[in-house]
Every structure is written in C-alpha cells, then in structure tokens.
Length: 439
Image 1 (cartoon, rainbow, N blue to C red):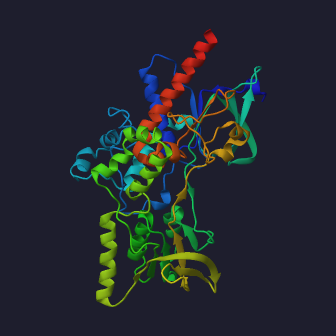
Image 2 (cartoon, helix red, strand yellow; image 1 turned 180 degrees about the vertical axis):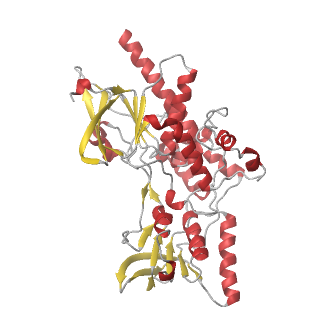
Image 3 (tube, one colour; image 1 turned 30 degrees about the vertical axis):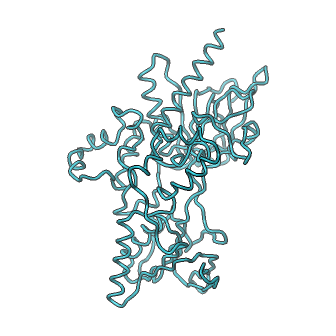
C-alpha cells in the first residue's frame, strides 16, 4: 500500500493499559462536549487483552488508592465510565457502600477496567505491537505526520503501516530484577507471580525466598505462607523491617492533581526535596495492616516452635544459580558483609519497575526530542514532548514523566486528570492546525 493510500488518524495510542484506556474515555466525552468533529483515535496493544498487573491479582489484595481515583472521576464526576457507574451496572452499589471501605479489592478494580474497556473494543487492536515510529516530512521539510509500523502476533513476519498526526505513548513500566539475577524456571519477578504460582505442584515446594521490601513483596510472602503450609518462607529485606506507608491526608496531597503544577513549575532543588520527603507515600512501603498480619504469623510460629517465616533483614540477594535441582541464592549481610548461600525451591524478586522509556520505540524521532541537562526528555505541562521546531506533530507521554510532573506520573492517582489534559491538548492543536490551513 502506498503512503498516500494510508488513512491518517488524529491520534494513535501506543499501549492500552489503564492510562490510555482513561484517554479513550476522555476523548469520547470530549467529543460529546465540543461542537468540533470527533478526534479519530485508534490504539495498539501488544498483549492479547487488557491486563493490569495480572500477576499480582492475589486473593484478598486491596487497592492502595481510593475507588474515587478511577479512570474518570477526578476529571468528570458525572462520567458514565466511573467506578460508581460500574458498581451500579453490576448491581453492587449498595453492597459496596455497606462495606464502609474506600479501597476495593484489586480483582474488583481489574474487573472495572475490563468493564470500561468493553465500550472501546472497536478502537483497540490487540496482539499488535508498534515496532517503529518514523517521521514523514512534507515539502517544507516539516514533520506533521508520523508513520507507524505494526507487527501482529498472528503474522510476525508481516507488518502494516498506520499514519497519525499524534501519538500517545503508554507502554507501561519494565520489570526490574536485582543486579546479578536473571529470570528463569524457578526465579520469577513479582509481575508474573500469580500466573506461574497457579501452575506449581505444592508438594514439591518446600522453601521460597522473596526479595523486596515493598507492598508486592509483603503480599507475596503472605500468599506463599498461607498457601504452602509445609514450606519455609524467607523474606530478604534490605531495611530492618517493612516500612509503613504514609497514608495520612496531608502527605497524600502530593498525589492531588494540583500538586502536578507545584512540582512542574518548581526548580530542580525543590523537586529533589519533594522526592526525598514523600517517597514513603508510595515507594518501598507497606500498608500497616499487612505488616501486622505478617508479624502475627511470625509470632505464631515462635509460639509453636516451628519457624516457617523468617525475616532476613539488612540483607540483599547477590546472585542465584541452579544447583542440584534447587536454586542457590547468595545473600549478603549489610551489617557484616558476609555472604551465605540459601538453597530454595523458588525465588521471587519483588524488586520493582523501571520507568517507561519511550526512546527505543521513537527511533529516528528520538533525535528530534529535546532533553534537559541530565539527558531526560523535556515535556510541556500538557505531557507533550518538546521537539525541534520542524516537528509539528504531537508526541505525548503517559508515564516516564516523573522528573517533570512528579510522583503520580506512573500511578493511578492522576490518570483521569492527565488524560483530560492530553485530550484537550490534542483538540487544541487540531484547532490551531485548522486555523493555520484556513489562513
């Protein structure tokens, strides 16, 4: 197919997790409010279906944010895509209210995401990976359109071409393993935990080590302890113990939509201070209730004189290797520097994620994106990447903007407002382009 035969979309979303799902709702409701023609949007997702941390949808695991921080409510409380609307549609609104609880189960929230996604299936292409983004130059040498090459999993050798005036990149976080440790048959990252745990033969697992000190690590320790009653569980922690999450109202204001302005327009010294002061609202912290539950299990073991749960604190995992059918983990004491070998049947690393990095997918286009003194992408307040003047198309990021927009860049807390801001920006730039053509 020739380039001039390819339809040009107003916007292509790369990735279709919660962030770009939220954008789909914002674009839909923007179309209903404005008199302008609807923005033509299409989304491409390499997974077979919408999935959000499926590997951590553990029974009993709850959200750490209020149900009001859904895909839409902070942008439009009257939206038909809200969590409250979902509850009403499912016939559970009264039952949920009777719980007197702001935090739904993680499985229920995932069901909500799938309920919203069902409204946009015609706009989403699953099993479709964007493998390259290339600039298309007009007769003046300006880049007003982009050409995307899409590879579909059903025909990996074949690709198709899509053109667009704007892209919104939301490819998600990348699972991060400890240095010196690679994934394998008995070495997992927490992102795949539940999927792989369900295939285990419990009779063959007698010992499990969990590396990490955050919420996911603590949830996995609890799940393994409760579901493998004959197994020893080792929690390998760098600190003395799990650090409690600061859920107090004043501290949580750092995730308010208004705090994005406070962060964005601050100087670098103030931004560093905000990170330092407020990391314990989200990073490497655990809910108070879960910490107490794990301590009670440890204490019950003490009373029973059968210590199944062991906390290896002030320690870190250096390496893991297969030895005689088991996994040998080298654990270093941060107190003494001594290294001891721990032989287990399963090692789970709940060691977090690296921020989204869009530069790989942008290819040649990345060379036209401007950067700060530390080599990070510069972003406008509306999450649009700052580019060379000849690039007139829009490159927006949903994620990867922690350095410019603050702690909520990779969290659910602000996606409703952020998606609305991106939708409004897309509409504004289209209006400006139409005005320029008319002149």
